[in-house]
Length: 128
Image 1 (tube, rainbow, N blue to C red):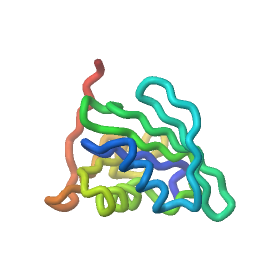
Image 2 (spheres, rainbow, N blue to C red):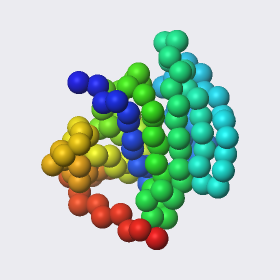
Image 3 (cartoon, helix red, strand yellow):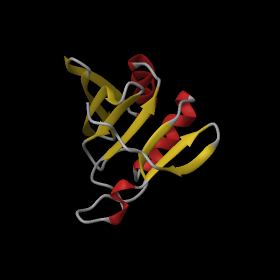
Image 4 (spheres, helix red, strand yellow):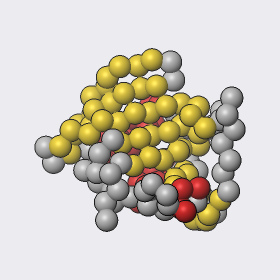
């Protein structure tokens, strides 16, 4: 089952590296508005336009959020997207470990993909 959207968190990476990773997975990427730590992109694949929001320091000082507001991405779920990002960028990537839906018990189930492999982590995001 396809997720309605995809979101991953990439540790200690640059906006340029993320932009290059996006470019390797989509037919085209257009940069949009930039405000503070937030960068809007429009990605295109198979005639579909997919909004992408990249937020640096979204989870603490080290993790950058990449959110695809569409189910038409090259990935079926957060985990397959995280695997792609880790393979290309060589960085630790975290994502929700379960399929998101209201009332789901998997909402706080986090997976981490790193050089140590894939494993579930407890991730409490501090509010600042």
